[in-house]
Length: 422
Image 1 (cartoon, one colour):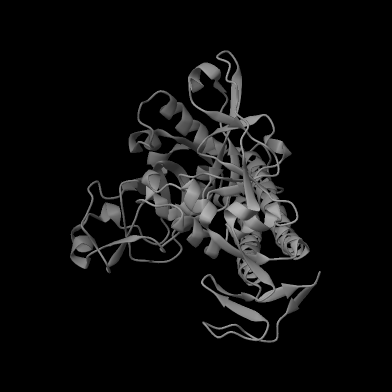
Image 2 (tube, rainbow, N blue to C red):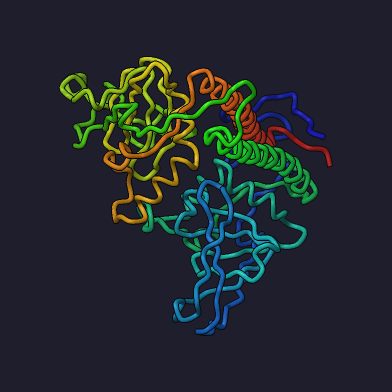
């Protein structure tokens, strides 16, 4: 049960029951500990055999956990020093520690290996809870500390120093049971987020199956029959590309989007670049999408279409393109869903497989085949898929809310602003 303290800790004001440290303000029954006093490094070298296969792990930045790499042979490893992954350890990627590339190992990683760049640490008994320290280093404070212990410039020159890491000071509950309780609360939030993630995945898989049935005509909706019309994209739409040159960017002006700004059926203007008004005016109409167009990625991320539902002024780079449907009897949303389906991706894969060019050539796209029913059947199909999208969007918003709640709760619990009863 969480007990909210009646006082609010603001800036440097210290209230009764709290103490001021160089790390901030914490409960006075918590202790300042050096990492070297609460974590012990563990190492179990691998006796690499040339003809044996070895499974490796990696760690994603921003606290996104462990991932598994392809198996490599001992011959490929050569003289590289590698170590067996042990379960129930705090593990860090020293190259990207400053980006919170940290995780907790489990029994799932038994039999996997990692290089010296992934040191592992066991919590010292009766002093530290493993989940607690993992959460701590995934918090803003933890990120700050990992940066302190990672001298050098950004990227691969900014590496976590073992000595510097050991000398880091953290303020933690002296009672390990309090650490356990904090971890349990945050783990409950993580389980809820994971469950929501699984629901989103299942709903997207369901959508794929429904698209396969409805967009191929394999399953017809009640009340519809008749043959679908076979078309090529060039017969139903005009294709436009973004600017083929890199314009001069400015701090404020007209948004200039590239494929990186296209995600989850939406345009993201948060981290976009800008071009001047004069640059926008002189650019060709090809780079100026308008309401109703189907915007899509053509370099790097191929497809991921977005319908422009309003007239928003922006320009695009050549990594993006858009379709402008010519016929009133063809719904732009029907074409959008076709571009999300295997009917589109299979045609892309055929072209890319036979080419060194790993992007969507507009010459190819013009010749892509699309089968289209009468307008009323299109509307019915689009309505079903649109409702599924609404369900997915709602689940994603709920997941994002849980993530934000967990982030705020983590900050409160790991600083002792909210205490737990043990």
